[in-house]
Image 1 (cartoon, each protein chain N blue to C red):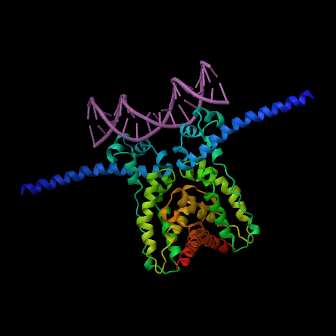
Image 2 (image 1 turned 90 degrees about the vertical axis):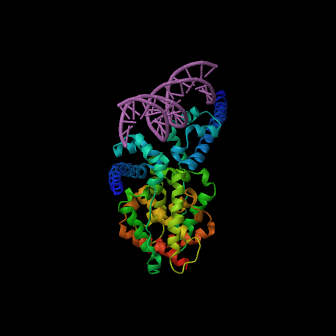
Image 3 (image 1 turned 120 degrees about the horizontal axis):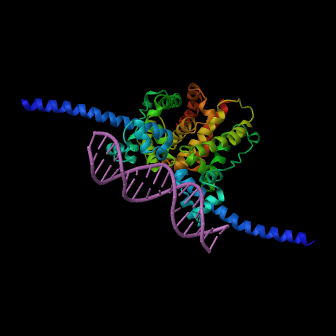
Length: 200
Length: 200
DNA sequence: GTCTATAATTCGATAGAC
DNA sequence: GTCTATCGAATTATAGAC
């Protein structure tokens, strides 16, 4: 079966070369996430991203087709929201805030949420991504909370959590930055919980 | 006293000419507020602003010294927050939300708050303005609420109100846009109130 | 006071050599 | 696959005519 051996060695070589190309691709994407999250869509230039990734600006276009398509990839994210049907009814607020804070505090700068939130106010592409994330991830997850009437709940919860992230991680409002995470879980958790209690 | 008459007629003439110049200045500022609020600092160009004001782009620089200084003027705002020492302790949440919504719903597009919020995420100048507004207007006003412990309260209230404005007026998240103002006053008011109750 | 013309940058994207 | 060189467009800001 020389054919099989040929295929195998081809795949190995292909995988090896893909590893090299994929490493470049990952380097671009990683640099893009950091700079998009720091400066927003307009503020982060293709040249800056290429410089941070250690490659030529032309490669960014070659790998991703354009700045806009690179941004869409960089702003991609999975919130991995917990299944609220497993959470006690009076602990939903704290659970959500704790999960949301963990997304930001751990590796937040490398994820897509800071990228999307930073640019959403001044870039329609980013705004659309954020609206889509709400519709496909946040709203369905909140709807699984037991005994909740449909209504404005999901939008109001999103407003509160995004407002917290905005003031703490984007605007960096000093009094919000210094609040310990545990305090946020309790205080904001209670406030979010009051939204759920009212929708029951 | 021909001197007095001379001064008087000079002042009248001066006032007349100032009226003309002031009208141009107001036209620029008004156009700048609308475009800065719509597209953010980077998205709104001096050319666009001049075109909407019906004057030459060079005049914008001449009147305001530069795009950045025009922005500072456009982002200036007075929240006119009510004196919370006059408000019943259990109505503070609703009072704040109602006042905040009124700022946005009536003439919001012409004010400085949409300008500042739209650009705060991607422009340090705007972010500084917003932080300054919090420090000089929001925090002192909230501190006048009777029987409140100092702590994270002010920052959390600002987070919730800014989050609401962000989702409703900037991001235009559909489920948040369609909520009637009265519902917002009640629902968000209760949630804000729970922050105050916990700080007592 | 006002406008024309342009200076001086900076950006995304592409063509083509290697 | 990668890089050099550059195009074409858009930006703020200024200089100078009227």
